[in-house]
Structures are given as C-alpha cells and as structure tokens.
Amino acid sequence: MPSLLFWFFSLLMLIGGIAVVAFKNPVSCALSMVASFVGLAGLFIGLNAYFTGIIQILVYAGAIMVLFLFIIMLLDLKVETGRKPKLGAVAAGFVLVIAFAIQLIGVLSSSPDKELPKLDLAAGAAHYQDLSPKIANTLSVDQKLPDVHIIGQTLFTGYNLPLQILGVLLLVATVGVVVLSKRQTN
Amino acid sequence: MATLHQYLLVSGLLFAIGLAGVVLRRNIIIVFMCLELMLSAANLTLIAFSRFNLTSYGLPDPNSQMLVFFVITVAAAEVAVGLAIIVALYRARQTIHTDDLTSMRG
Image (cartoon, rainbow over all chains, first blue to last red; front, top):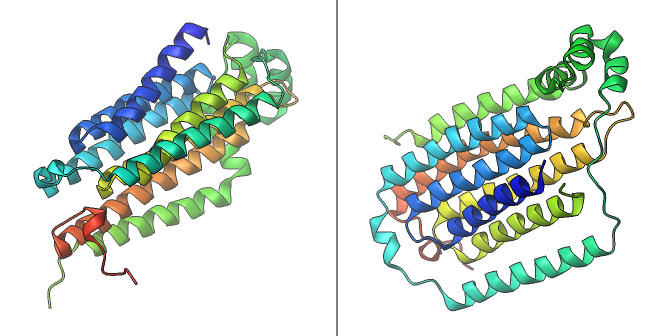
C-alpha cells in the first residue's frame, strides 16, 4: 500500500475516532464512527485482507451503525446533550491516552521493525495444489490473491466447530434481544 | 511503503482513543461505541501481523483473519444484546447517563 494512502486512511480513522469522543450530539458521534470504520476498512484492504475490509464496511458501517442510530433516535436523547463533562474524567482520559502512547512508542522503539514482505503467489499455488485446485489456479494463472476462497477454505476445514458454536451464539443473542426488549406485562 | 510499526502505532492510538472515550464519556451509548473502536483497533493489529508475518508458503496467514472474522461476529451479537439492555434500562430509569445510575453504589 503506498504511504500516501496509508496516511490518508489512518488519519481518517484516527480523526473519526477522536470525533466520536469529542462530539456532544450522539448522532454526530455515530456518523463519525462510520468515517472511522471506512478508514479502517481501507487499511484492511491495503493489507490484502479484502474480505475483512468488505465485512468491516457491511457489518460495522452498515448493520451496527444503523442499530446505533435507530436506538439513539428511538430514545430521543436531546436532554442529555446539555451536560458539562466532569473535569476529573476529562483529565483522566487525557492522562490515559498520553501514558498509553508513551508506552506504545517505548515498546515499538525497542522491538525490530519490519518492511512489508512481498507475497509469493507461486509458492502459495504449490501449497494449494492438492487442497483446492481452484485457489491454486487463481494464484498461478490470474496472479491474484483469492482472499475469499482462502478464508472460506480455512473456515470450513479448520474452524468448523467454532463456526457452528458461533451460529448458536447468534441464535442465543437473537432470542435474548427479543426477551429483553419485550415489554414486561403482569 | 508503510512498515509494521506504523500499523501498530496507528492501531494503538485508535485503542487509546477508544479507552479515553470509555473513561471520559458519560453517555452509555457513546461508551458502547468507544468499545467498538477498541475492538476494531485490535482487529487492525491482527490483520497487520497476518500480512507482515507470511506463512511458509508466502501468503497472508488465514488463521488470524479467522480470529478477526469471529471477533466481528461476536461484536455484532454483543452490540445487539447491549443495545437491548440499554433500551430496557431507559424504560426502567428514563436515563442513559451513567452518573444517574447509582443504585448499585455501596
């Protein structure tokens, strides 16, 4: 990923994140969170994780954000916007960020850096020759990274049980949400 | 080309911003959004490590992308349940301001 695009998407992501914390109006917060997640998805796609980038936009910027906006508008939170933030909490937040950033820079400066390695599509094609000829074909003939195919292949061979447990979790969450939001009548 | 450290720095800063939001905001919906930011920052770290530490056959490691996939799915379930709890809370107390929710204070 060229440096210019990296910095563009990183700044979009970080400014969106700061705006989530800084804005008073919850609707503005939700929309700046969309901007933040779009920047994050750009970074994912720059890291050759195309599937994850698209999922990030579809799930976070699409589904979760609509849910947030729906709840914000359902609760009609105009009264909440007039409050002053507490000085102690603001100071604690700033100290936390600065301490975290200093620690991060300390750790990063004492560990070795790494340049972006080049993908070896021919070796990947040789590896997937037996596992999945279709992936190997895309890698060797089209010279492209079939990200979705590789993730699907890994998901349904190596992570079959976790996937089914995840399905049960989503079912439990759905039932739980219905039970929680049903108006209690007795 | 961006290096691994730059990706880790950016994702660490996003995590720190989310953490600050959890500490200093008092609106419970915004606290929830900041939690999502922190989860996404962790996802960015995972994807960066997946791309920078290639597998022995020269492709990005699919296992860390699996972890990100599961994190995103669980986060979606968590948001659904959390927002339902917030709606139930608002019905019971008519507020979502954390300063007003002190009934469990010792």
